[in-house]
Length: 334
Image (cartoon, rainbow, N blue to C red; front, side, top):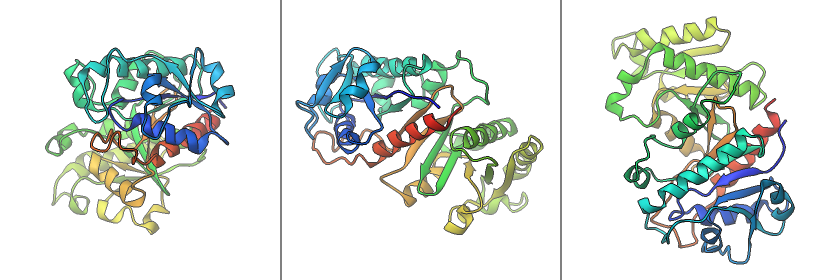
């Protein structure tokens, strides 16, 4: 069981991150869990929900919990130039990356109990030379050298209502998904998922349902060979390794309420196969969890929403759920 506040990286300051941070603090300040922001204090103070007068700069994470009931604690790492809500710029990229690196470093040193990341936008980061597809892969690189006694990720899990899904491929164009799949990648995703269900969610005997790639899960190879050549051997391998895995199942029969009662997580093969049912179940409250890391990391299951940034209308449901889930996992993980 880990203790201490959560570190919340601010994400892209031109997006809705500052606004939903203030709203999350208002929702959690009385009962917690406590968090502090790693980012630009002025960006938080300028949030349209109004963070003005609510921000308290801290020097160390130890100061966060005492301040949390009355102010938003911020480990202030200032931006290097002005940022306008709704107008992303690559000039902010070095700060955004620094905030993530700092939060992860604090988690690796066990100074904080976990990391929650507000949304980032990939395009401005790419313009500044960022070489990772997204948060998940960057976190995998930042934690690669740390000791960890389990199956390694990073593997993306999404949770909403009574559904958990994990992904074998993440941000791959649909035309490339089949070529990216192999037995090893499916088995590794299954092992990481089963381990996380035990260690992070307290499920003693996890049950996995593995989705097929093709319509009707390939119809025994008559509508595509991926199930026969990749997914079925991977499921057998997982069972040989002690994981209760079944499948492949057709995606169109895997996510209704009766089906969900039969497994603890669904292993999906591509992005929309996992994200569509999650967002249908709880569009506002879904949470992204990174599995297979030596640190706890969650994030809201949405983007920067530049189109509404600065207007005070963004909902913080997903960020609040991400903070609560990070705290729950930190207390469950041995």
